[in-house]
Length: 296
Ligand SMILES: [Ca+2]
Ligand SMILES: [Ca+2]
Ligand SMILES: [Ca+2]
Ligand SMILES: [Ca+2]
Image 1 (cartoon, helix red, strand yellow):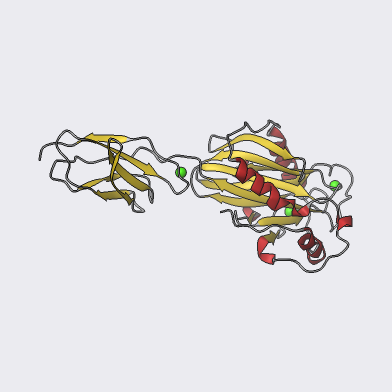
Image 2 (cartoon, helix red, strand yellow):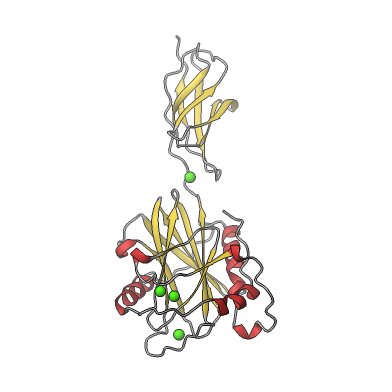
């Protein structure tokens, strides 16, 4: 999740010439709808500690490549690695034509002609924080972007948490608490009302990061008697299940993709209280399930 490369100034310089304007016909309706959805996300600062600051910093560093204007690109040599980013593919002005964006790559695009909307589709694999960062290399673009649900549906599947602006890198990041699902990131130029001043050199970059901050639900546990050398039950799929007696760890095992787990232990005395927790890959630990060992 954190191995995206850095989109460098050099890469952007090369990109500018390789992108084509295309023959997109702008459709004002999508633009207006996207603008409204984006502007509804009032600028509220991200509460401290809500999102891992290391992740936020990383997002900002990775997107900083498109920093500032092209006049700094005097010595364009070669793109470092084209694998670090993807280039938008028009037509992408509505939900059905959205370009897929992954957490590994930054998406680079243009906002032209007037009224262009670029829509990206992002798949959130499980509950967690979706971070969306954006930046432009141009004063001709007043970059507006935001995550949304298909057809602008609003509900608790996607909740806006706030934004953070990094003055050092000129990167804005928006954070959302998201349930597992498919979401969209809309990108517009907010100064596009009357003047079509954008050129092929005016670019933006959008990056996404996913942070699993949701702990697994409490595991279930089947009856354990004083002969049993295994504890069984259900826990979050692929989580690591640990069985303890007091503070003593008796064993642990990974739950299957169906959520079934089976942890080997030494037989315990009747009356021993076992506690069972599940931990996900990101290190979030469930609350404890407990069971008391009974006589067989
Ligand atoms: Ca575009
Ligand atoms: Ca577009
Ligand atoms: Ca503009
Ligand atoms: Ca989780």
